[in-house]
Length: 105
Image (cartoon, rainbow, N blue to C red; front, side, top):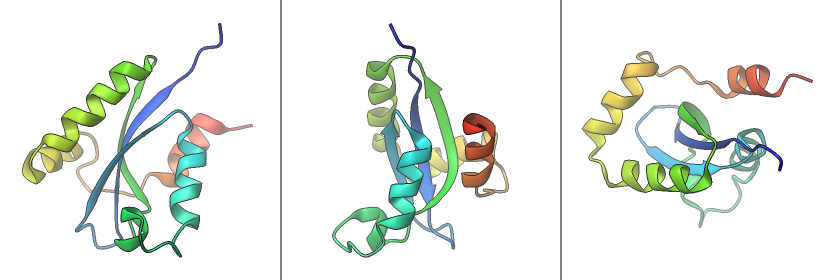
């Protein structure tokens, strides 16, 4: 059986005013999709220009990842900000770091 990683992630816009929470089994592909789907103004991430990764967690079980995504989406913004600050206090954009760290060829 092939081992998979699942990612729960938080994106923001360049001004760090909007948060988007998602789950994926391929974070590199998903970031690419968010970055390159800016024409579709019906999509939340496109409408609010959320393409900058600021937080993520890795899971080996998809059900655990989905449960965590659901949990985070229910949180108030302040609690989400505290979570982000615990790992990434400067809210640095992690897109390139994640691609290099997890997907070096």
